[in-house]
Structures are given as structure tokens and as C-alpha cells.
Image 1: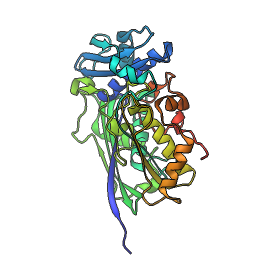
Image 2: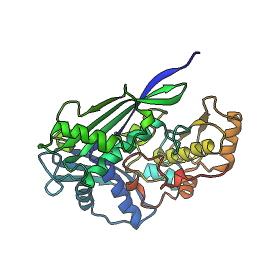
Image 3: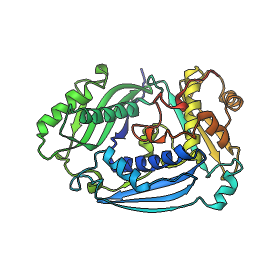
Image 4: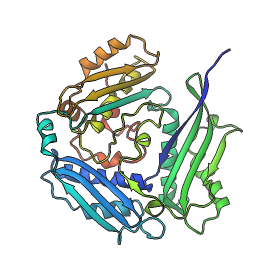
Length: 371
């Protein structure tokens, strides 16, 4: 019998990864503005490198915030407390370059138009309980576990930077087995590598991954260079918006290219992507298709989307043009409509930063709606 076989790899990172530290700083600044002024317009990016943090972008808000205090609080939160091995939140240099939103952009946003032009995607499939692709869902769970065992002292010699890759073997478009799990985790200089490998296998991987997805051929690769002592912003630079595939579907579905963190809901890069995930999830959970990807496009300052496209990969039970009609009848895709529907004026965004923006039931865009 003919069958289709292929391998797909997805990645997740821990909260101490420099890019994710920058995302968290940007989202924390956004939340601080929204706490005082729900109509804040925010587009903030952060850059970190070896003892220095730069925060730049645009804020138009009645909020009065202390950016330096927020930055140091986030760095402390992710255990950036040693200038030799990651960064020291107490002594690092902090530079800010923040202006107000361009009046040209505000002309369109003030009347309910999109804060930028571009394309966005939403996706859902029935591979997992939360309707996320299996590889990225597993990678996120392993990255979360890596953080938990560090914070709870289960593996006390770990540091906060870490990366996870999961390679899944698919047969006939369904996950069949895990081929490879790769984990790189920062650790204290005194750590024994044999003990570390065994601890990661027994205390991180085995509690998370279903036993029937592993077999004698599954490969476990742990700290492949043999040493990961220097990490964080000492070993690497960090930048807001550089982990957009980690944030979404792990490379399984398309991505429009726009980052999420540091942007308020008028920026459709973020809000429309959340809405499309909500719609795609509800198409799958309502049984209209087993797999669904939606694309929408916007023009800056325009209220209505320019285009709407859907692909159910042949798994739909009714024609895709009828599903598009259902979408148009049930969901308001204007920027203001999305913000109101998903309640995006609340300071919830720093909670989204790590371990994926999708597949986590705590967020409004993951709620189930009967359509």
C-alpha cells in the first residue's frame, strides 16, 4: 500500500533565551501602558547584548511608566543575575529611544483602520487536544518543563537559557513517532555532563512525552557541544520579534512575517493573527474540517480586510467558499471589531511571551464558539 512519509522539526526556547527576554521586556512595557491607559498605542522593540539593553519604538499614551525599572524587573525575573554568564540586571546599561506614534499612521488608526499593512495567518489541526501541530506543541511542553525543573530545584544546576527541537515522523499526514529530541540547556560550570544528560532524560523528557511516541530508534541529543556555561546576552544578542515561528506553529503552517511582542491591538500583525487562530480553531472544533489555514490581508488605515483566503487541505466537509461565508457572518475582522471581541485592551500580553501564543486555554482567542 502506498503511503506518504516525511519528517518535520519544530523549535521552542525557554524564557532565558535572549530573543525571548527582549520579547518579554517589550510586552511588559506594553502591559504597563495598558494598565494605566487602555487606549495606549505601543510599538516597542528591545535589543540586548553583553551588558547593554536598548529599548526603542513609539508610545502614544497617557500612562507614565518607568522603562528602566521594567527592564531590570524582567531581567531579574529570568535570572539574568551574573555578568559573566548571562547579564546582571543590577549593573547593566539601559538606553531608551522612544518617540510618539507617527501622525500619518494615527490618521488611519484613529478612524478604526489597521495600524499597518501586511498578511497574517491562522491555523489549527486535530493532531493534539489543543488543536496545535504535534511537533511545536511537544517542543513547548518540553521547554516549559525545562524551566520548571530549574525553578523548582528539581535540577538545581540549570541556568535560564535553553532551546528544544522535536523532529516528528509523519505517515499519511499524521504524527507517527518522535524521531529526535534535541535539548540544549545552560548550566553551572560545576555540572557533570553525564548526570545532566540523565537528569534531562528522566526529569524533563520522560514526564512530558507520551511513551508510545518513543521507540528504540528515537534519538536524544542533549547539549551536543558538551558544554553550555556561558549563555544569555553574553553569548548571543537578543532582539524582539526574532522568534516568530516559535510564537506560532513551528514551521508547520505559513507565517505572514510580522512579529507580535511589543505591539498593541491596533497592530494587525498581532491582533489579526490571534483572531485567525481563533477562527481556524473553531472551524476544526466544530467539525467543518480536520485542518484549516486562513490568510487575511490589510491595508494601513483601512478598516476592512483586502482579502480572505482559506485552505482546509481537502479535509473540509463543506466547500471552502461556504466556510468563508460562515466566517464573514460570524466574525468581525475590522481592527476595532477584533480588539473588542478578543478583549485586547487588557494588560495580558506579557503572559503570551513564552511557550507559544497559541494552544494555551487561558487566552480569549483560544475560546470555543459554536458556528
